[in-house]
Length: 134
Image (cartoon, rainbow, N blue to C red; front, side):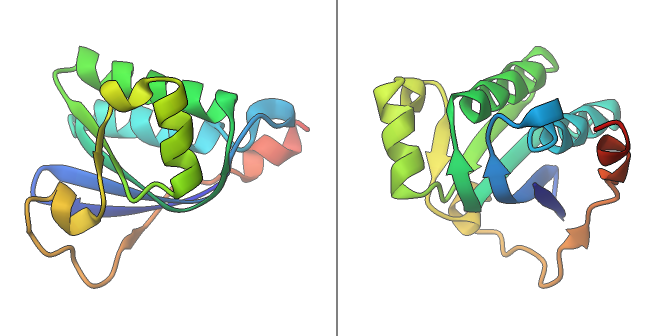
């Protein structure tokens, strides 16, 4: 899981790419959990997850989205899902999570029309320590 950060006003857009699935040592889940934790620690609790580059999502990935949602809500924040694939939209509908999450078709729609910056800020998250324990 690779994550990029974009800051648009008080909204943080996390661009996720890769798999959000169950894996040994949860190496595909932990980067998202760490990113949400860092943002909460910084007081940045309005987050949009850009899912356009997520290639696989399973029940464990859905559970992580719910955890991110509840973590942000407890801090008075919000979580928006952006550009999920047809398959992800189907999973959200089947699990009725589409009634919980706010889902938008694009980052522009999620930001209310504000243009995102041209260059995303690269993540400072280093997941290499995860592999050392594997």
